[in-house]
Image: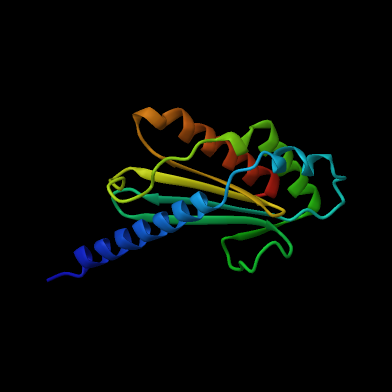
Length: 162
């Protein structure tokens, strides 16, 4: 008997639990339009607390990729997936998110019954004390939202030098 089915079930259960946790956090934190405009007026040299978590999960193999971008002191996250941003980079990313009206992006259900072989994308942004997150599962009805989210993440990576 191989361990492969067990590992697959374990990975999928972890992904479902993580997705449910992200969805619960998103429901308990009301979105606010304030971060989209307020920090962009600050000088680029003024430190702004910014914390971004991008996750890609799901797929046939149970992919779980995470990438974190943050200003110094924004959180206790450390590791190879964490990129520390300068105040100038943070300001550019905040401006990008404001132009894209990120705080108005909808989120989709990520509870039980939504997991299949498609990928799921989460982008959670905290600017100062204000947070907003978007969860988008891959699918015919969400194709444009997935493309928009991935385009913004790619721009964030470019600004961060990744």
